[in-house]
Image 1 (spheres, one colour):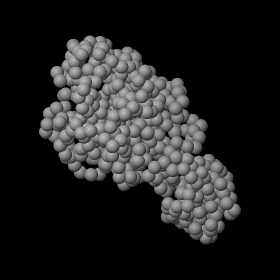
Image 2 (spheres, one colour):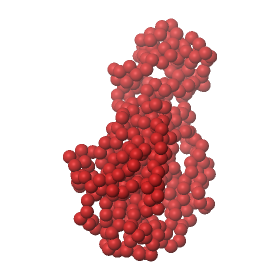
Image 3 (cartoon, one colour):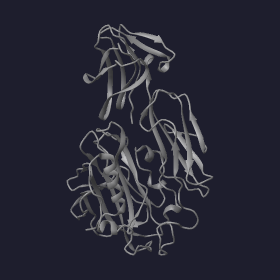
Amino acid sequence: MRTRTRRLATLAAAILTAGLVAAPPITGAAAAAESEWQDGYSQSDTIINCWTGTPTVGVSGNTGWRSPTGQVPKVGEKFYLRGYVALVGLPCSDKVYTIPEILPPPGLAYPEEPVIWGINQVDQPGTLTDADLGIWDGVNGGIALTQADGEPFVLRRGQILEFQFPVVATRELKGTATQAPTCQSRRDGTAPCPVSQSGDHLQVAFTVTGHGSDKQYVTPYVPLFATKAGTGGGGGGGGDSTPPSTSLSGGPANGAITTSTSASFTLGSSEAGSSFGCSLDGRDRACTAGKHTLTGLTPGTHVFRASATDAAGNTDPTAATRTWTVPVPARSLKRSAGWKLASAPAAYGGKVATTSRRGASLTYPVRKARRVALVASGGSTHGTVRVYAGKRLVKTVKLRTARTTTRRVIPVTTFGSAWSGTIKVVVVSSGRPVRVEGLAAPTR
């Protein structure tokens, strides 16, 4: 039995911040043991919080190593690895399913000792057990852990899954002195980085299903040593091995819906003289410190990423990321009889779909949508529409406002998981103007 340490207490604080439930932080023995573990780089996914309707952290995971002496172990000495993941935010479902897959670097042997593990609440003492687990070949070439019956682990909000197991190094491991796992698939959450591209780093690929997240995998990692074996310490290796922290300011807010087809960000780094690598929607693009402007953005959800690299060649392993959605303009919506597509310089896209006919409809097919919003004008005499996802009525929207508005983004619904189908907007008022300028269906 072992207690959880400081990083789990930090997760507890994050759960309180994101989820509106009061609980005390981990204290006592757990806090006292904080120096034992060398934790790595965490990773989280994003969900839509069903209480607030805004993007928030869904699950967050990390991994680490620990030696009995507190020093970097020599070749042949036993030390311990662990992984842990918590359901932080309040998703539209009440639980998440996860299977950890351990992706260790070459050069580790595994003593004949059980894995110890447990699922605990953050507001309760954390204990681990050596109860049976299922151990399988993972789909990414690693070692997958399940419950003894082969089923995934189930986490409810505020619960942490943690596991620990012993290993022995059969060679000197150099940690941050080797290539970190910073591949695009890890950033996107579609797969962990291949072990062949991850140097002397331990990855744990936690599958994430059942709560409408933007990632399939949350893949934290930790470097396994960086100094000569037996000399102590948990990092270093001579020279600067600390990666910079990337900052991304300005531009659309994360998760926003914006009717502009351009966006400007300011790129910064915690270390002066850093260079930058950037991508938009998975495609690399040149960028430098300071202002960076994107133009000609098409309708849909966009992801911009920036990573700083310092003068010593250390790259920030957790790219600064911004996700936002540009709506589909009115001219792209399929219109039934009764609509007119009118030019309107102040409207989004320069066009507005107008009607006052009851039963007139607009439709648009969406794929893997997480939310839906209307872009519409309002006024004191404006009418009412109903919005359907497939055949299901999701919201009745009154477009009437106290005064005339040129444009507003009106949230319609949030899906519990990615949804594909046809969105239909039907006018239910008669003789009252309805002016629709676009529709947004964020996929993240």
